[in-house]
Length: 69
Image (cartoon, rainbow, N blue to C red; front, side, top):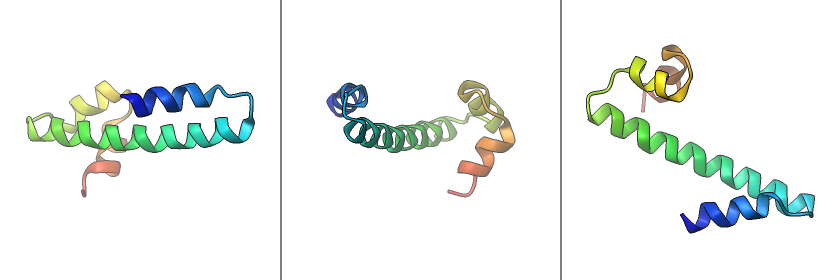
């Protein structure tokens, strides 16, 4: 998790350009990690509702985002 740690540190940089770039990179990384975990949950037989509950979103939202992948 060195990349995430480095990005988190840069997100707090005094230079807004550095901080904002780090925030954007963290957002992309988070989206990738979420997709990996949703795929894993589905492979392990989790329902869309179980995944949604863990992510704190509605079943419809998680299915819309990942259901057709």
